[in-house]
Amino acid sequence: MKTLRELLKEGESRLVEHGIENSTMEARILLQHICDFDWARYLMQADTEADPQEEYKYLKLINQRCTHYPLQYILGSADFMGIDFMVNDSVLIPRLDTEVLVETILEKA
Image (cartoon, rainbow, N blue to C red; front, side, top):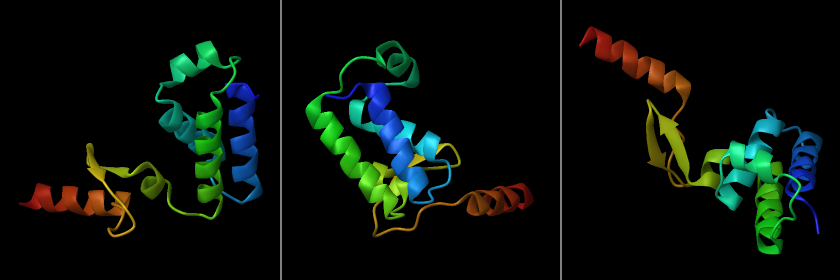
């Protein structure tokens, strides 16, 4: 069995190998998503053994992300102007450029 720290390192390494930018951050986000905890809790429990089901699910998501499948689709949500929207592969992921465009239009309106 792997510890949470080892699991995170493995996820990060796989993402780096597949050319994922922000691999450290994305590995953390996916681990937090699967284990349903925040970063502070991770730091307190980093050396505890990972639950086998959570390890399986985490590595499955890491493998999915290694194919460059968008992180937002994996998580099922995307932030747009401070609002969290549910997303899947049937919708476009809101982009920062669109936020800037909306803010510009709101200033002019």
